[in-house]
Length: 293
Image (cartoon, rainbow, N blue to C red; front, side, top):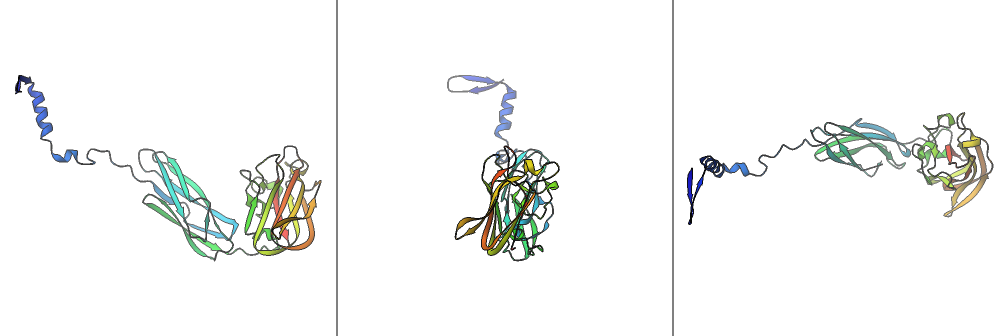
């Protein structure tokens, strides 16, 4: 026993404990240095792009996606954020990706890229970064040629609708595919069953002369027009800031309907959809076409 004396009494401490205290008090200073003894940092998230070169044409519906890959090379799960940036000549559907990455996992996220009609042909970068990791996609843009059939819908600068059903995007109604048998891979469907009216709209940067509209509604072996097609609609053009009805269709039972009218000069055209042939129905357009005559 080792005596430790205070002002009033003597304490006896086991020799083993004294030795331990001595080691602790004489330990080198680096033992308490910042970061000493901490577990090593997890490796940073790595970002890459599936196909770093992509070719697209100008126009809202002529774009294509890049595939962003986020990889967690560490041994612990992490939450990862990545940012995307591009010149003003391009439009990205999203500029942020946030995802959970288990250890060793790679997430793949598709990000559509579009070039407005006025974009000059050329090559533009899309940059993706996650922390210190970066990757760049090279986007080659070409000008969209006029549709050989004269279909003005294919050169619309903007396509919009009252709503969109998942899996049936806007561009499905202006992609050039008029075959109802391809429903599910082409065509537009609104997102609100039984709620009328709906509308589908085309806009152009410069005024166009329009004298005929062809609407292909759903009419396939599996989905006949008598149950799944559109029944009533109006064709409207934007004149002096107001929508004007220039033609109407009522009681339709055909899959393809040509509507002709006195040619008008306009920047925008829409079909105002009023009713379908089925109860609790949706608006379904396989293809919408517009011509000068």
